[in-house]
Length: 120
Image 1 (cartoon, rainbow, N blue to C red):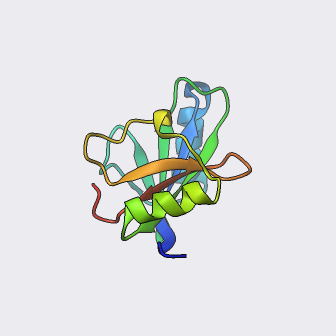
Image 2: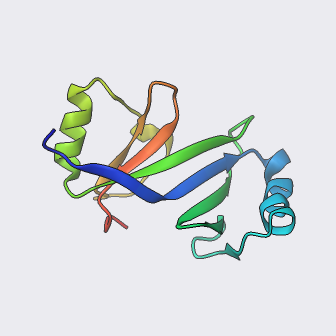
């Protein structure tokens, strides 16, 4: 494999509006994780060395987990993934003009953001 891909630090939980406040309260009040709002309106929590982001997702009927992967060379990683038959799903959420990354799904339809670490 020519492209190096490694685990990122962000985990996104996309939650429908009818479950959003209870989910926030669960991680904040029941579990006791420390919240932060660096990317409001999303609320994040320290999850060990990772960050768990809770995003309200009005278009969804049930919660989903989205994971992050890092690569130093997104074009090479994208080619590698395409050659392996990995499905791209960039329309799932806009990343902005010139963003060096993209969305994929694994065989179980779990969404992953593959990006260069300094893409944001």
